[in-house]
Length: 151
Figure 1 (cartoon, rainbow, N blue to C red):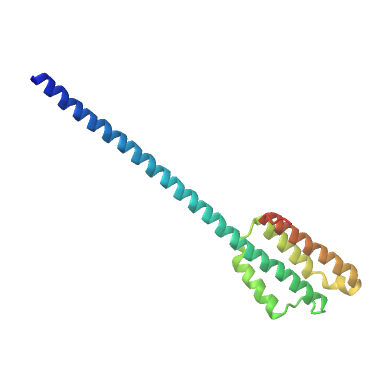
Figure 2 (figure 1 turned 135 degrees about the vertical axis):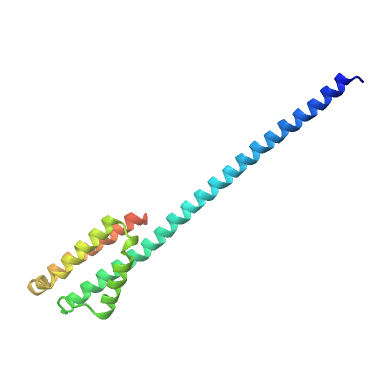
C-alpha cells in the first residue's frame, strides 16, 4: 500500500463519518420538530376541550336560571327572585367570560324580557307563559347548536 491509498481510505472514512453525522442530525431535527408539532396540536385540542367543557357548564347554568326565574315570575313573585335563583345568577355573572358573545347577548336579552314580563302574566297568563316557554326553548336550541349536540 502506498501513501495515496492510505490517504484516500482515511478521507473516505472521514467523509463517511461527516455525511452519516449530518444525516443523523437531520433525522433527529426532523423527529424533534414532529414531536414538538404533535405536542402543540395536543395542547390546542386540550384547550379547545377545556373551553367546551366550561361553556357546557355555563350554558347549563344559564338554562337552569332562565327556567327558575320564569317559574319565580309565574308564581307571582314579580321581579323578585328566590335565593337559589339569585345565587345562580351571581355564578353566571362570574363565569360569563367563558361564554360566546352571541349566546351571552341572547341570554341577557331574554333575561330582560323575563324581568319585564310580570305585568304580561297578570294580563294574560297562558299567552305570556307560552311566549316565555318558546323563548326558553329557542335559547336551548341555540345552545345545542353551538355545542354541536345532535339528536
